[in-house]
Amino acid sequence: MLSFLAPGTGLRRYTRTHLKHDRDAARAEVLRLEGVIRGLDATVIEQGERIAQLEADAVDVSVERKLREAAEERADNLEQQILALKARTANETAVTVPPWQRPVDPDEQPTEPHGIDVRTLREALDTSAA
Image (cartoon, rainbow, N blue to C red; front, side, top):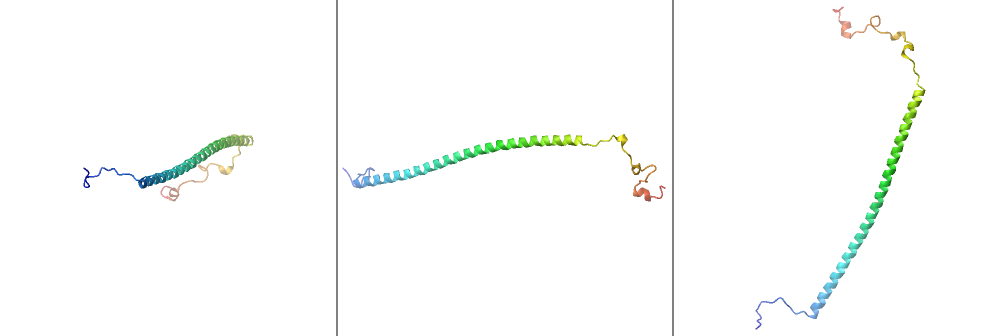
């Protein structure tokens, strides 16, 4: 016997109104999920384009680095060649005179014992040492 005070079983009778509401809710959820999927697809496409751009930039940087290294190597080689040419030119145009043939200026004679008296000021003013 069914009593009105008995606890419920949790089952309820679905009516057309309930079914229509559930169908509309399911359609709304499907539309929402389609929007989410479209947004994620757009994000994936943007990230793919960004990855392609970064890869192209990486290739550009790699090429630029190789060109810079080649230019630096060439500059180093040219600098070495210039230094070698400068050294060769300096050696070709150098004036060398052996030391025994150089004229000695009489003013450049040694100062002691017969030249200028070179003493410290204290020694020069110390009268007791004289």
